[in-house]
Image (cartoon, rainbow, N blue to C red; front, top):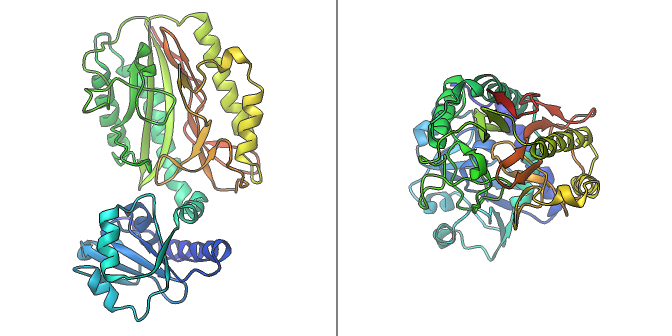
Length: 396
């Protein structure tokens, strides 16, 4: 078992407190419930809560499993609790305002919590947490680089060998998942998006990849059924001439990379689809060049979008009325982290941030062309960690 070093945990707490002082000088206490943030700050992912006071040491209160928390974590302040009442007894006075994760704490949990923690007001701590997590340490980047190597090997080297005429989208998705896990993938693809469920990612043959879904991404999938719009269809079989679209996540020790790879099965795509794909690859490379410390995400977005002609913009980043208004997103313990390469994201990039860049374009009768790779922000521009194959790999 590889434990998160204590120096990492202590540094993250310090960074969070500094961010809170700068953004909310009057803050006195934050309470963390989400398992992702619990893992980030304590190195274990249990049912409990982390209380971070402005002054003094933070405490991880664990309902279950206290033993597992002790086994997994080097965090020095872990205590068991049966209910929130136990934790409340340990605190002499509560501040008037407590900072909470408003994006992920359900109302029922909030009501149970405030039954014993009777503060007057709550405020959101979501942006501050996202800001701290956005800049990765070398320790964190080491896992993302490992994930990126797995991603590259499976999708660029092994993916073409998996394609067989007559296989279903679901068949390919399951095979990809199995191989990714064999190569070292955690097996989980975590999103922060509310109530979002994802297994493997989007796998589609032909125009399945532009079928509409609730998912906030450029591509789509028909999925297994209306109750399970995941993996891919059992009924759509691979045929000669199909575009094969694969957009899947990979993770090592909780840290994700994101990658899209496309294949041409049996024959080449029409020229207009090939040209659109090549333009998407060029857009990705243009964005990567701009991923330097100090760059402003909203300016990157506007610079790229303003240089695209109206014909190309039709069905760019989606298909028909279903388009997304971003070109990439930060990534780490979640696939969909902040900041986003989109309008209104005006804070400068910092070295060590990581982005999935994904310019894509829907083509009627063909499917979703384009590309996605994961890049680390460096002084020299985005450093790709998921491979350099431009996609549309021919499998003839």
